[in-house]
Image (cartoon, rainbow, N blue to C red; front, side, top):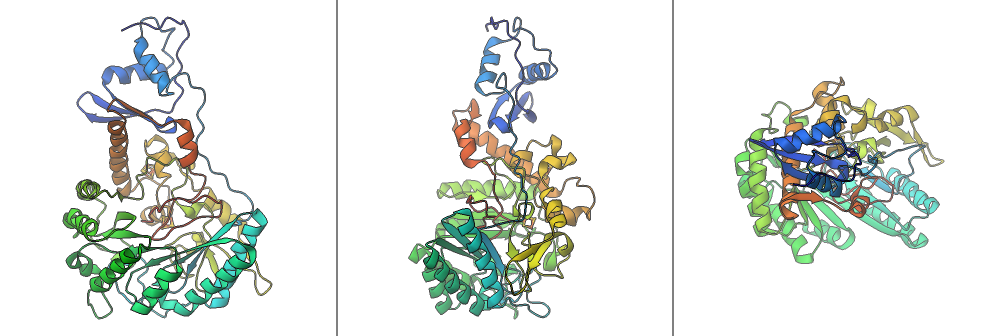
Length: 490
Ligand code: SF4
Ligand code: SF4
């Protein structure tokens, strides 16, 4: 061990979190430096001394340790830059999400939307067109070369086939006329006729498919109104997608009952299909799933770990929305970043769970409406400002959480559901997020040679989040022009 000879007092230059992992072993994590290593109590005490300003000129300190911390930018690297996405003015998105209908051909036991119950609302083609015209106008005004449409739920979007197909035809005409690139995605339960499947494959750019695993697992919850399992149709759709090399991801919803089968379910999906991504989320106990046993448990974490290992053996990645160490952001999803989603009746929503005016949190998440026949949209600036303020950097409870700059504060809708609009005090999902985030950090250390992990700053710029990360079951882009890989809604 050599002492630092420079005479310069080392200064801690990173926000540091220390996470115990086993006896006398701690994970030291500097999220904004994207750096981490595993150290003992001595290393932790050394960092505590630095934090308290007790680091002296170096004499008496371990010089190699200081050099090591300098390499990781934890010491003497100047101020950090938190990823604070700032929004102002009215939204001018180049992406529109259309909640085409509340009708559904299934009655999934855990459906957040309780879709299929009550009178269905269908979006008329004129309304969808107005949404498309708006994002095309924005793309032209902003000098972008593309725009995007997401056909989404509240029900099964393909149940409003006329609006879906007419909207795409209209969007295509505009794309051709203005030489813009159009991308269109669909979130679907994959129970489609062969003819509609032909159309999807021929006309769309990707889909997110809800599928929970092998027939006995999938059919336990994803059933027709008559109670019949839907797996046969889903399998047919996935096989067709694979045969055509059509891009798609699979979204698995994991109920408490299905947790013990999660690894086998992932194995089944990997062995039989070729999805670009598989995402598993514990069932959200709202809608038809309200009152079901919670799946946000330690058992989910254990099952997820095993399932992840199985997916890797097939060369695939299993994801969970809240754990994403590759991302730096102060927002979890588009709900607080100006998602432009239209309900069947023409309100503007920022949340996938809020797809109609009677949704429980409509007052918070519906922030605009059509300006009428003259075109354009009216936005409620106050509501918008409130939503934009719901970022992790403003939340006291999250200040001490090591996952905060990747989690971004998790699902705001969930937080409201759990805390009944009161002060956020954490949810059961937080434990899952922290456990799986910790796994990811340790995996990065292991992948980097086993001693430390440190990403070059240019990687931060590439992956840093000034955009949206929530994709729910689709692929979403807020209009700030940055495309992110799918991220799941809860
Ligand atoms: S406390 Fe929960 S919501 Fe907040 S950053 Fe941590 S894991 Fe995310
Ligand atoms: S993650 Fe939560 S807040 Fe965001 S869109 Fe989905 S339900 Fe809404």
